[in-house]
Image (tube, rainbow, N blue to C red; front, side):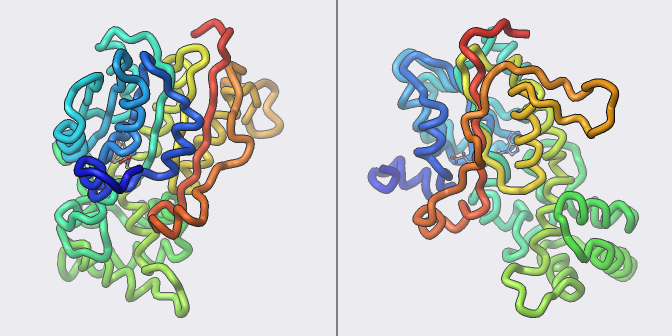
Length: 324
Ligand SMILES: C[S@@+](CC[C@H](N)C(=O)[O-])C[C@H]1O[C@@H](n2cnc3c(N)ncnc32)[C@H](O)[C@@H]1O
């Protein structure tokens, strides 16, 4: 369904939406309803939502990246669609500004789009040479990956590589960066990729040795875990009774955060053992729809290799439930 027609081809070339049918199955949008797509990207998921809620419904789309908003606005127009260049951690504020009390469903398809990875000047890819930027929101004043690599002490770099990248050679990589930057600034993706490859190369490894460190820097530059936590915390206030949240993550840390948040919304305490009372805020307001994490089918992975690490979880707010 996505390979015919001019508009569909444009959407595919920007980013191929992952687990499209499964997303639609869990969100089950109906005509007249209101949805949020918290990560517009190339608008693939959003387009399906928009078609399903037409003609009277609405989709509110958010993305930090101006390219994604411009691309999707030019492809899908503004019929039933409101687009905002905002962090999804601000979804409550965006809805408040629109006077919308809650939505029937919300999708967050985390990470970065193919367009972002494949555009060298964005600096996300270790395979394409470009400035070491990695900001999703280039209007932000925040530091780029080059700034972190130039200024952070070795122990902070090592912590980022270990915590966000689960890189076993985190200390080695951090020390190599600190040593190299004394001689010459590390300004490009190629500079960093070559340096990391020289210290992290594992014989027989199937991935580029810089994969985990690049991912970790991206997460740090964009404060991805903080935004995700704020977004997950806002779900009880954003979802209408009967509304569904679907989150697709590509990283085990993110998936763990989603799993924990959904468990709490199902009333399961996630406090560490031994605490005298529950402090995690668990309160049952609905049910997890995905008892086991949902992965793409092998055919999808063959068609779209970038879907291979995707993990989908869905939560449905109970129909009869007093909202906060
Ligand atoms: C995997 S892509 C989404 C693809 C989209 N579902 C599609 O069908 O084309 C992830 C998108 O989320 C955006 N993004 C990541 N973190 C964000 C955040 N905290 N707030 C808003 N957008 C974010 C990225 O800029 C990127 O465009």
